[in-house]
Amino acid sequence: MRRDIFQAIADPTRRAIITLIAMQAMTPNAIAAHFATTRQSISKHLGVLTACELVQHHQRGREIYYQLNIHKMKELDQWLEQFRQIWEHRFNELDQILETLKQQ
Amino acid sequence: MRRDIFQAIADPTRRAIITLIAMQAMTPNAIAAHFATTRQSISKHLGVLTACELVQHHQRGREIYYQLNIHKMKELDQWLEQFRQIWEHRFNELDQILETLKQQ
DNA sequence: TAATTATGAAACTAATCGGTTGCAAATGTA
DNA sequence: TACATTTGCAACCGATTAGTTTCATAATTA
Image 1 (cartoon, rainbow over the protein chains, first blue to last red):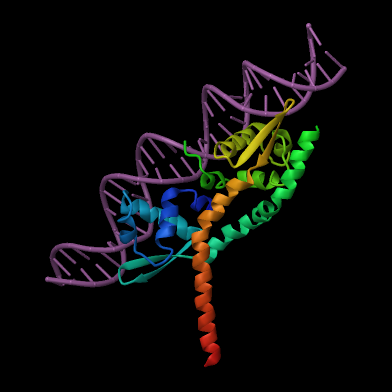
Image 2 (cartoon, rainbow over the protein chains, first blue to last red; image 1 turned 90 degrees about the horizontal axis):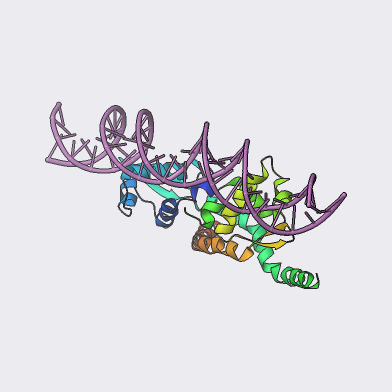
């Protein structure tokens, strides 16, 4: 069972959950109230998000509060870094490519 | 058939292809040479990447050159933007806490 | 022209995924 | 104590996925 952030954010419901709990911790019931699906399916999504450490949770009585682990989101940012460098310098390269194609 | 960048980058082989063709356009054969899989499966991955516009291609004789559409990668960056604000904000809060501790 | 090369498309398969239903455990409340 | 609430877990199902094999098409080359 592969569990990485890329696979985790592939699902639109999970992305919505991530956005939802980004600002404040929420219980599975409260989260499920925002979606047209069952609490159990939300629970499974939270399981996936927890497995890849994108969310953390702490129990308070019988309620469990889930919250985004913002540091893990940085891994995505780090992966993007290599491409950010490209798109910042692409204009020069693109000019060269177009010039090369024109000459051929 | 859902085709978005999040689902496209969920697969590790596709992420490797993206990195591979980020700097220069490559043919399916050349790309497949970098992986322990068949050319046909690479062709399918390129189909997924093309469907969500993450890669572009141009034919040259009987060869087809695939290249990363760097602009599409920006959509990922834009989605991350909301969280970048959060983690910068929390770091500011952390700075304030550390500053307060230092003064005590 | 005939053979070779580069490629995409279709059919098939095993594995995985997202969702539902049912149930058990733990906690809180009357 | 008896009952309600909150939650995770397991079994199951239909759809999707990644990969392989086979085949057709188009372009190059001998």
